[in-house]
Amino acid sequence: MIKPVFECRMCGSCCEGKGGIIVSPKDLERICAFLQMDAASFTERYGVMHNGKLKIRTGDDGCCIFFAQGRGCTVHEGKPDICRAWPFFRGNLVDPESLHMAKEFCPGIAPDVSHAAFAAEGRRYLREHDLCAHDATCEANALIDK
Image 1 (cartoon, rainbow, N blue to C red):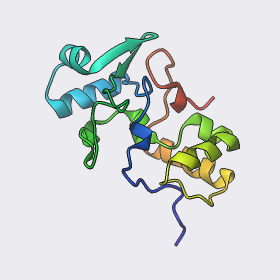
Image 2: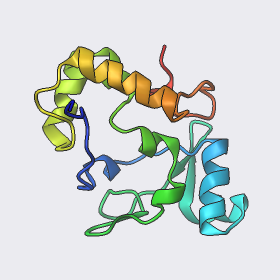
Image 3: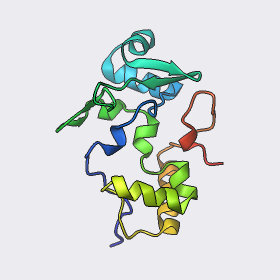
């Protein structure tokens, strides 16, 4: 059996940081259906516009407002593509140093995986799960493979 390059440990490290969780139109539809609310209500309650893109607010702790310590993502089934794609972001796929830095804070990335193996698996995963972005005006740049 081949060892996976990534196995989520649900530690929440990827849920930290302001302004990184972009909600594309496809994501907005999914998360609103999950939360059983309309887009305007979601945007007003949970969103913030930044550089023309809808992003999920962060709490006082600096984490995504949908992350609950000890429980993980409270909107897991409806979460945005950027969350579904972690750690297979463009930077980690194209830059070995970026992957090295990601390994330092994400315990789910296999520490001994080569950049080439990680990138190949990441691109396969993104294609297989329809997570590649195409519109930089409303989707996460990290999911656009340039």
